[in-house]
Length: 113
Image 1 (cartoon, rainbow, N blue to C red):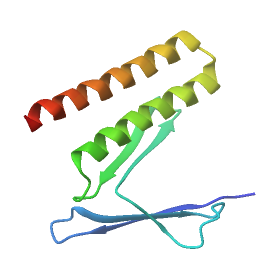
Image 2: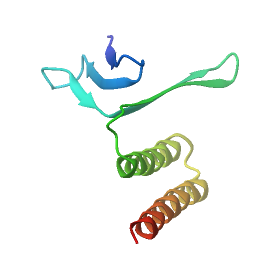
Image 3: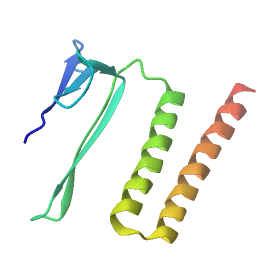
């Protein structure tokens, strides 16, 4: 069995992502899905290093980026929990994500004044 994930990135004249589209063969969606940002990581077991692709479109707002990071950190904590069952570390990761998000919101409120 095989599944294919396809990511298309349209660039503007300055080579800045203007549109990110993706699809997966196992998806129920019948067409490519739009996204304003993506984080894709691969683990190289031989080099013991992470390879990453982080992209976001120029129309992604700062508050959306904070939401994206918060949800990604919470999801990473859940994945780490399922993989390791190290519940105290997972709790710390989630606490940090919540603290990060609260500080972001406070900074936004301060800027708005």
